[in-house]
Length: 115
Length: 118
Image 1 (cartoon, rainbow over the protein chains, first blue to last red):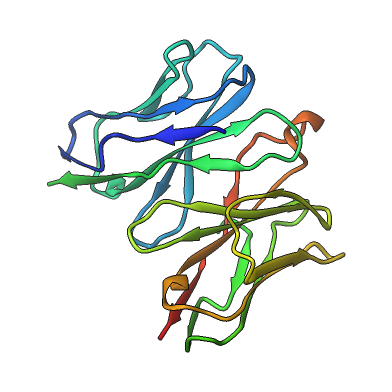
Image 2: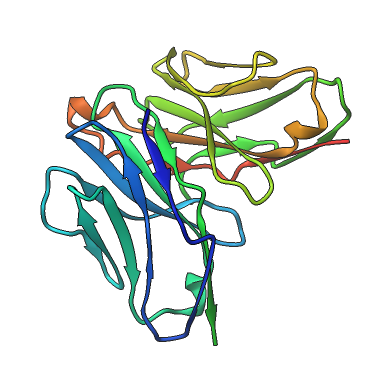
């Protein structure tokens, strides 16, 4: 079974600084998707960024980028120029690239951006 | 706005009761997923439906059941409720499954239904 681990329950960063959230996963699959979802205090789940395992290039979305290390089964999220609105719970998630599969979420990292 | 609608937003009930949570997926999405998020916890996968059929099952209790109707909306039924069932229940929808090419894997979440069992 697939598992997703986030070893940092809580993190904080100064506004405008850079922070990296860690995620590791365990799978025997070769093709899969990885995601970072954000859950602000409103509790709405929002996709931040996604990565397809067969793509070697790391995904980027504006201030958000990932460091995808397939062999190490590591998928970290870097947030540059942190903003107060980035304060949220961040979940790393995994989905096999097969028909009808579920998305498995990690336990989350609570990020606080300090003014 | 994700396009996924969940009702009710809040629900307070007593132990032993039964409730039904409803989800309308984004227009065009065929898959519906249900997740449970207990206080300060991650998201636990309950069940997935695709075009009316159950496709994947997580650690869903026998007291819980779900279905997806022909119009693609879904309902999660929770019965014999216990205090520990208090949680935020999310519905999410997505496009066709990954292998059919149109799916990016992204889930679109509703705002959740907060269930409080007293």
